[in-house]
Image (cartoon, rainbow, N blue to C red; front, side, top):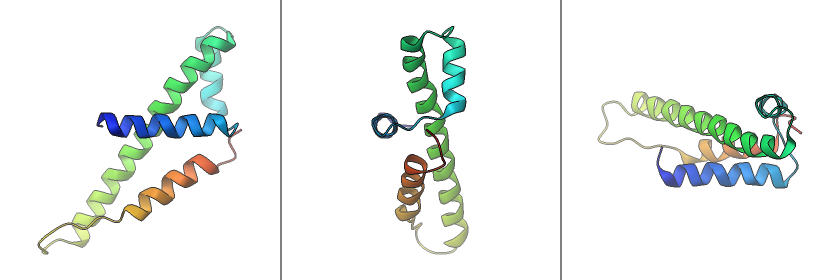
Length: 99
């Protein structure tokens, strides 16, 4: 993914942290890798969450592109709906019960 995509994902991770949201599974992994050092775990958590979210975004983009290509096969161009991506990112950063 491009640097701008990475910046977008890092910004989303920051918004999650500011809202007090945390993926407990990734937090446990970060704490374990950091030998229960909270300061080191926070740094590791950001890296893990950014990596996970980038994978989610990349997977969704690939799915949308494949769907659009299949839908528009035979036409002169591919039209992608960005609303699906925006809704997905909003849902990922505002729900799922992560604390």
